Image 1: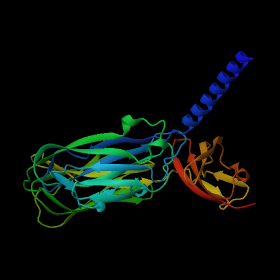
Image 2 (image 1 turned 90 degrees about the vertical axis):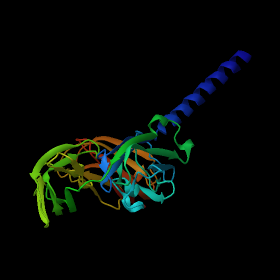
Image 3 (image 1 turned 90 degrees about the horizontal axis):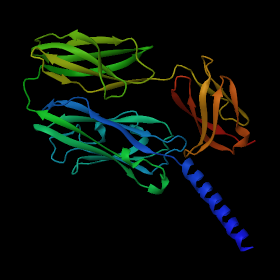
Length: 353
């Protein structure tokens, strides 16, 4: 009898351990910093650059819950370069609105607390406009993730919670180009870039640069500059092949001696060309997921409003349905991934039967 009780106890312990491990494995939210870098280094005193920080939820199923994660972007306290302006107005980026931001002028640091769930597998950027103040060989900025509720991330990879980047500042010289403005505007399936200068001294040409992540840049064209001018000059360039998602643009202003200054970054976003629709909304029974191209969706995930995954539907054809009668009345989010791996988030309301 004792032997039977011992065996039974071991079996129960193993089952409980398996259940605990399964629950832990399902809670895989992983707030992560994916990249951090400046658009140029060094920069000239009184000239600007952009600091790009990439943030992602590296989990496969679990959303980052509202109010559980902070992102701290710390600039050098000695202020060889600072945010421009020194307020949250210096911030932009595709993930800016997912956080509530404050700025500490004493420590030269931005702190953002997430104000909404961040679904598994989603990522974006936070951009900080920087201006050079005093010359320095290199000064370091640091971004770190603050886990406000560490228990919410039992499977987190803590090795991706901290990144740093360095920026040099050199003494100011005669500015070859005084840039009045720089704009990037969507025109159909293309992007129209336009800029104006108020004066130019020994300016050579503009290198129009493009990036998909705000860190790695390539040239998509050049335009000759005026050389020397004291009147307003206008320039334009069309990018014919922007990608689906976020497109980043900047100008590299190069003078006759090959010195250069980079402009601020502009972004233009193109939504997925699948033309995804969900209907009816609100819904009671069957929810139809439709693509204007008729393509098959890789997956459609149903999440609660606070980001908890309820179900995944794979290889759903355009016009396929999800039975919403199994879910109680309330607000839900659909994470729809198309055949190209692009993701769209749709909010739906489930009415009572």
